[in-house]
Length: 318
Image (cartoon, rainbow, N blue to C red; front, side):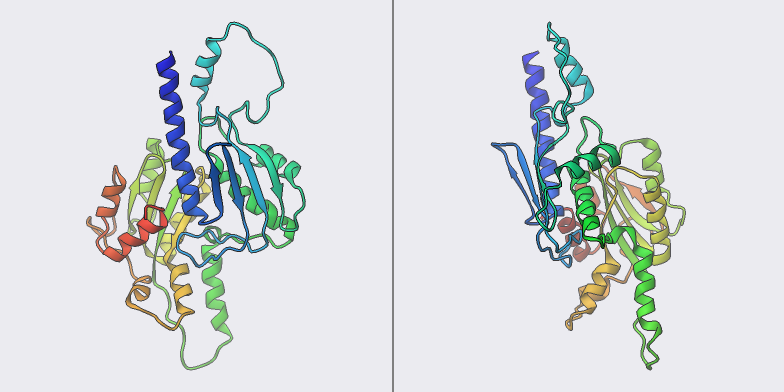
């Protein structure tokens, strides 16, 4: 039994390490983890949304500190097994830590106001957190939305308004009656990260987009990674379809349209910038989405080295 408990603890520790690494990639310079105190500190601060893989954090500030309980990432079976070894049962009120969820130590909005109560309410009522699953990313994103909402504007998340941005971009040109027009973006590529991709039904949906002309790659497991490339309208439609399924922690980590627009603001439009508006090439046939088993296979299925580097950087591998 001791060996089993030790093995479970090692698995939990490894999963937590992986989760923290992903958070550090999602929020560069804004997430700190203290292994001794088991505390995660998240600071919104001033964040440059132009960085690759950035999630467009708000500039208004705000901070959140969470304590990770020892039962975090322990599934119900493990908890039940541990309870079975106890001969005496004591009934006490359950806290979030008892439920295996992170405990809120501090939470402040952009003005420095204490919003622990609001944050706690948001976690309990708005999020469907499950014991034994990684939930830190969901808590941080929900906290961002809470703070933005208190500021009155609300952060418009990049992966929630692909079509709106496309329309706004076109609308900016409607009032211009000059002789030259900006080139229309025909193709786009998106990199999607989600908490996990395990169920057979989900894996089939990931590799069978309704627009059959899309190309891409699907890597199941934890985390799940999806890459789609093709005509902008078709990519947007497929992303909308997947998002409507409300898969856990579904995030568009990178969008070539956003990247290209950011580069258009600069004068040095290099070859890499021009490639942002072209369809990506994969080692398999065009118009097909294939499933791979490992990250190495995913990267290996991408033809151009510049595109491989984008994927590695976005996923925090380098």
